[in-house]
Image (tube, rainbow, N blue to C red; front, side, top):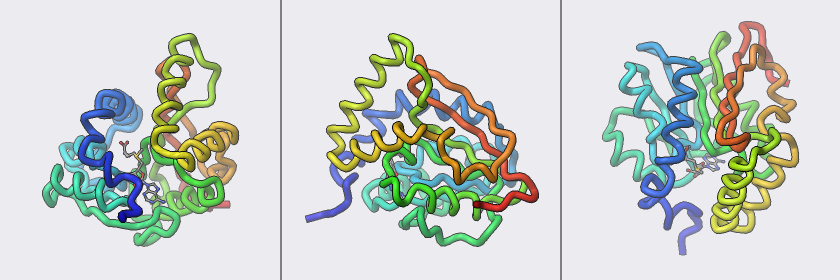
Length: 214
Ligand SMILES: C[S@@+](CC[C@H](N)C(=O)[O-])C[C@H]1O[C@@H](n2cnc3c(N)ncnc32)[C@H](O)[C@@H]1O
């Protein structure tokens, strides 16, 4: 029996979620447009869809994911255009200060709270001074009526994804989501956009040239 929680959903993931993910990705790209030659890491890269526009922009791209099933989809999509690695974001196989952009979409909310700080520290460690994190995930703002509807649908999806998944997502929201990540206080110049009636946030956090993870 496989222990990969994404084994069943991976072949259908994009069909189900790309319509939701694509506009969020586009906002992140506008908030921090990539330049040719930049090194970009997508943490929890899943099927690799988020790497495509960075490849098109001439970046050298890297994807890290703990699911072999999701990486298989990414390999099929990107066919060698990106460096894809199976691994745990809490202990990344990359040198310090390597990437200009380190991004993660719909990833942080599914981490067990005990590992979240380690993952953020790793993301900061591998980001070059002067580089940035681009984080896309559930927001913790007040929800509009539409936002509440979207949140209900999202939470149903999280519940279908499994008990642990749902528990971690609730803990993430309870801790204040991305603005609540105190370990990220080493990062400066935070910019954010909240969309979907308060349901989703896109956050750009810069690693100052002197920043050190706390
Ligand atoms: C909800 S999917 C999001 C995929 C993609 N980022 C997107 O926006 O569609 C979460 C991804 O994070 C990966 N993941 C979860 N925990 C991880 C960890 N500790 N290290 C690396 N990847 C992890 C999962 O395997 C999955 O592919």
